[in-house]
Amino acid sequence: MIDNAACANSTRVSVDSARKHGILLEAVQVLTDLNLSIKKAYICSDGRWFMDVFHVTDLNGNKLTDESVINCIEQSLGSIHYTRSKCFDGLTALELTGTDRVGLLSEVFAVLADLQCNVVESKMWTHNGRIASLIYLKDNDSGFPIEDSQKIERIEARLRNVLKGDNDIRSAKTTVSMDVTHTERRLHQMMFADRDYERKPIIRTSGDSPMVTVQDSLERGYSVVNVQCKDRMKLLFDIVCTLTDMEYVVFHATINTAGDRAYLEFFIRHTDGTPISSEAEKQRVILCLQAAIERRASEGVRLELCTSDRQGLLADVTRTFRENGLNVTRAEISTTGGTALNVFYVTDAIGNPADPKLIEAVRERIGLSNLKVKELPLINHQKAEREEPAVGVGGAVLLSLGSLVRRNLHNLGLIRS
Image 1 (cartoon, rainbow, N blue to C red):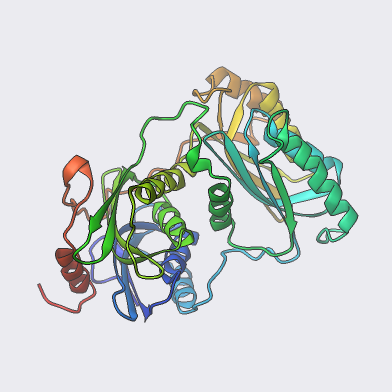
Image 2: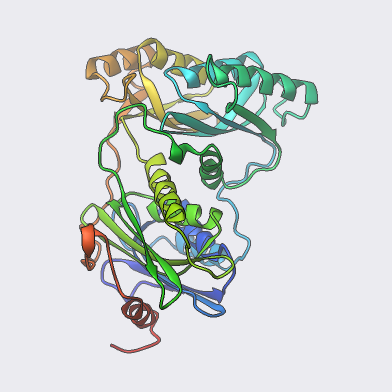
């Protein structure tokens, strides 16, 4: 149910459903794939029923007024099998993980260009010295998916050599698949499997690390996870995705934002109904959630490339970055109607802000009108309703389960104030 009248500055989206594992992730995924900003949320799924309330706005902090967006939310949330935001049928999916280094993306795209592979879409994340990339491609000559087993073996072998470099023989992985899943969820799964959360950062980061705590609520049989960090788009998706893939179920949750900060609290259990049972497991949850939040945190200058697509374009652009000592920390590649629409986040070789003169030199080589510096999009909270959360020990958000449940039921309209 979508309600534009209940709140002055946001659209309320209510979801009621029979409870099943992963349903919260599906609901959050629908909203984030539409680039909606979640200002507040209340989750309650005790017993067999699942009830969610999300307060959302568009990227400008306004209520939702576009009927096509509202209809898409209703149709997508009405389906219990929502799995991906874009259709990648007719493309070959290529998964890469390995040790990150300056120029690695340039080498990957150079190999693909040499093997006559046309990159249609791609996303690449880096974290703690590791890289994960999901690349959708087709054969440059035929325009069809790459199904020739010998060509697939050549692609995998050559990229494995690039990824392993001189010291990563064990953990470099390449996989070609025709089975396409939700791209960003798959990137989380790839980095989780690569155990990036156990590794130490190699390059310098902003220092604004997320604070995560895990506590016991033994009388209720839950483990309570509190997160406090800088707010950004898709934050809730990244956290819920990781909890779901770690086989935890969220029974209750409250999400609040204030200024540029986000405060999230989750009451969770294992899928078998038991809470977290050891300090070691608590520490693992903390590390995994911190990693999930940091993977998408955009370090560096945001560069947007918009130009006519051609064979070898990505190899040429990323080679220019490498030759000028720029390190790509995150990338989003897409093509629409013969036009390349690419976003790169770049730093210097050790993670410091790139020299503006260097950026301008790169822009001059690639084309000033094609490659532009863009400010990072800010989360707009000015127009959204603000509700300061209760802050407990160490700044973490601590709410009693009783007040949380009452608050959820009130917001669902099931009880009166």
